[in-house]
Image (cartoon, rainbow, N blue to C red; front, side):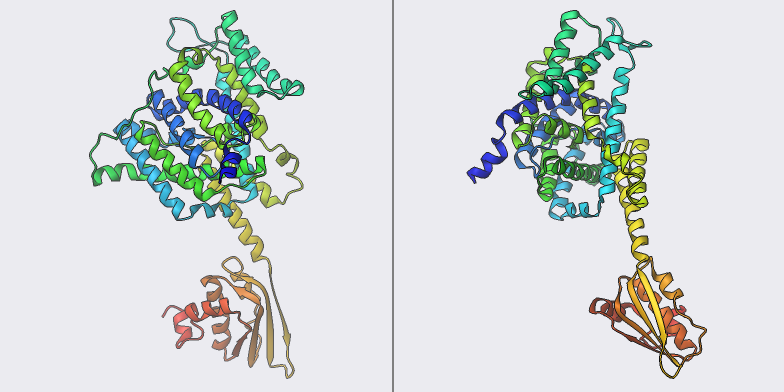
Length: 506
């Protein structure tokens, strides 16, 4: 047990500590931005990021993965906050956690088996594009001037571009000389020092919103606990629970690939639920795993649980006790870090492989990207990708069906040999392979090499048998395997009295 504890917590002490600091600095503006999206005070997002990161660090199933307040979850809260206020959001957050724990026990993590590699690639590419697009407003020449509540948009603000370009240079060139410290951390420190020393007028973290000046306290929602409240928050909580687990499972899969390690996704489901309960009790909003911050963590050297704990603790300490300094960090420095994440996240090989991969795989990947970028809804894009994968797979397997026939001695008996899979996609082809106009006294349907999967397939077999019998032809079915025979016994009508009338609906 001690060896396992040491491996997950202290095997990469220096890397986890430094990576956690980098992630904390990148989390602050995002948590504030997501709070603004949801329509709540910035401290709601910051407290949520602290609570969720700390709880998942201890009980999560994926070491090295960062969980906090996210944009996808914030979008689902807008209407609830607008119509009912913060207290209902806190209650919805608590219910979200409870639902996620229940889903963990119900093993919803196994649904990840139905997410194909093409969908994961599309998810990653779409997220990389969204991360990059989210940085464009910061590069649009925003100049913050004293006395203005809103930013004054200019044609071009060269200091912003200069700081961002310099930050990218540090990020990519510093590792060529030394890897003793994470280059994103040096980028943030150097850009901040330059902006302060030269008094450069650029947008800073402090311009995103007021930072909290106190630690979070226990806060149970002040609202009536009745059926009416449940009717209001349950639909929102269910959406948050599903989207949160979907993004967390996808992110865990990606971090698994980045680190060549496996994770306990069932445990992660429960941990996400416990983290959201803690967030709701501390005045925070619901959250989930963040692929962008997780990639920053991994690329900065974070591998163990300590990096996630460090990110949450540092975030809170910095905004509460070092708020004046954190507020002076230029957004251009964080833009450089996020552009690095975007470039590192995008699967560039998926572009060069478009011509060599199967057409259906490429369509699934591109459709997932298109839906996510168009709707900014990662869950919807994944669902579309999974649906298309299922359709293409069903079509492909449906083509694996061959029905041959031979006329036996005497010329009045024909034997049909069925090879392949019979289900809803291939049922029509199965029926069309038989010649019902041929004058025969007997037909033998050999199913030794066939498998019937669903009631659509059984219905197709009914049609074939009843059509032959309707013309006075004797039908013999042989070779049904045990699983197919069970379906036939339960759902077929050709072997029951009044088969023709039942099949025709009379």
